[in-house]
Length: 406
Ligand SMILES: Cc1cc2nc3c(=O)[nH]c(=O)nc-3n(C[C@H](O)[C@H](O)[C@H](O)COP(=O)(O)OP(=O)(O)OC[C@H]3O[C@@H](n4cnc5c(N)ncnc54)[C@H](O)[C@@H]3O)c2cc1C
Image (cartoon, rainbow, N blue to C red; front, side, top):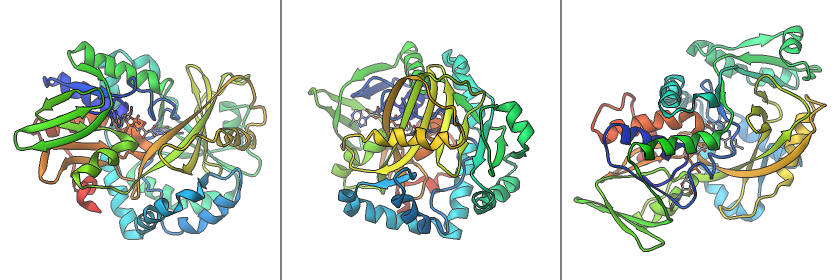
């Protein structure tokens, strides 16, 4: 198992529990990469791709706004352009319908998958089931998303509109102005996503998994197995290897002659350890693309989509812009004990992860590219990968997630 983020740690735990002998390898400690600083939301109703008809027309306006939700480091345009082309192609009405149907299959059991892994790994105290409050700045923004709510109704994904009195009773600090407020009761959140990932990895190790801290240089396979070569000179033999290497996955695929449209979609957070205000629920502004989550360590303000090189230095002005943006509906947001963080979402052009074996190399299994929903889908992906490895029916159609779809 290469990668000890939420995806790899969940795969390791499920495989070890089913009796496989697992080695979990990462150059970082478990849960210290992208899975560390995310917004913590288990977003069961997020079944829509980021590309859909008309979205490309919004991009220039977002890019021109210094506090806008999207930014491209212009030196990266030659790399981003082919990905953007595939992103645009994934936004046709027919593809959107297919992608929604595929996401629904991955999202269907996420709450049960969390129930199972949290109970078995002693991490249940890290979960809150309080739903999500969703805000729009104005009725026009809400109308632009109306198709998503029609789809949610069709799919039975519960939501409802909140009146001002109800919103004020639930979150007295929120100023709605001329906006629209909704409640999504199916959302849950994790109050320490990095701690959860580490807890799941620890539980796999307690069950007998072997933890190796090392950087993997290359992976090669033949009919008799897989060889994993590491920076410190290890050469590890395995029957099967799972690539749960998030945004770095192309680096291991390229020497095998494979490359997928996977971009680092960077996001940021600002964390207030003493926020000065208390929120009872996670609150997201759909208009401003910012999400506030009450966490064990304080209040986390996260969001942004920045396209930059994989190793480019973070630009923490983006983390501060998120706070300014959130003050629009939470004017009292302030506080002390500020820390800032940047993470790189492993974003596929069609918003679907890559799951399943490589063509012609059944002993190399992909589990990466979960984009905005890696925390939500990590435990379920672990279960699915264990089913594949043990030759069971995966329970869903894997064709939409195949690496050969591009
Ligand atoms: C600001 C922000 C907010 C988010 N909010 C949410 C949210 O609310 N809900 C949600 O579901 N998702 C959210 N996400 C997305 C989520 O964080 C990711 O999808 C998820 O963390 C990806 O998990 P992963 O295990 O695939 O990757 P990672 O956590 O990045 O783990 C991959 C691991 O692979 C290791 N690795 C890679 N290559 C090698 C190698 N060659 N050798 C050794 N080790 C290697 C890395 O060191 C890393 O530890 C958010 C993301 C961001 C940035």
